[in-house]
Length: 160
Image (cartoon, rainbow, N blue to C red; front, side, top):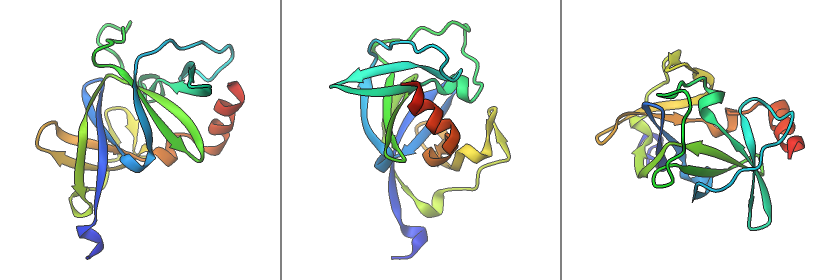
């Protein structure tokens, strides 16, 4: 099988007005909204920590990380749609807040296009590629390994 015929799966979700995907191999689980405990002096995009079955997981707001504005500026998390995707980044569990989980889709490597230089305020360094999705239009594939540089990851870990 040629490399361009290689298929991988994405967990897709909405963040603001855009649809995103992360490689399913980077996802530990998807959970509904739960209480988050705020942490003083945490990075501006870290909203707090979540105790999940005895494991402390930092929770990141990608709206703040990517400078994505919310409709009313005072977003309430809807328990029916919103939640967290727990990612495994460099052997560290990190939760990201999502507006709405969509579905898991299979994507051919040959269908992934190079990311544009700037897209919706998100730097292209965070984007692995873009793919056309029949349900949601274009889907931005996030590069979870580049969401945080090693210093930021260490700061998040130390904030717990």
